[in-house]
Amino acid sequence: MDILIHACCAICLLEPARLLRAEGHTLQVAWLNPNIQPHEEHDRRLNALLTVTELLELPLTRLPELTYEPPTETLSVDRCAYCYRLRLLPIARLAKQLGMAFTTTLLYSKYQRHDVVRRVAEEIAANLDVPFFYQNWRPRFNQGQSRARQLQIYRQRYCGCEASLKLRNGRH
Ligand code: SF4
Image (cartoon, rainbow, N blue to C red; front, side, top):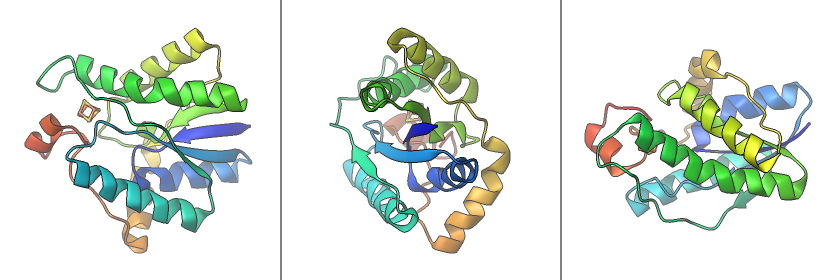
């Protein structure tokens, strides 16, 4: 299957990309993460992704940036669902244009709201009539983290938005 994979960051791409390729899928990577604050941190994660996609020889598309305006100040299911939808909707639209399925590395991180990511992606897939490729990569979380350490890939300590930065030890 041809799959457009949304990368939330470089480290979260490593293990899903390896597994998908081992299963014989063809991959393209897409970057759209306007939730990452401040701007310097956004660019730090993007630069790490550029390093990884070059290393893995994966094509990377950067989607036009969007404004991130969450519905609540504090972290909540609604806020994260908004954040997932903001990113995955344009990714799914691009996948449809390219005749590909879409997925996201958010399904790899054990710090994300996995069921919410899945629900949001499935809703988008149904609305746009584009295939969503679901796989639970969380059981491989430690392997991906070890590989990131070996490769000395930048590893962030918070999810992305200002609220998660304040929390620091919250989801990422
Ligand atoms: S915690 Fe993460 S997923 Fe939730 S709103 Fe903030 S950046 Fe988005």
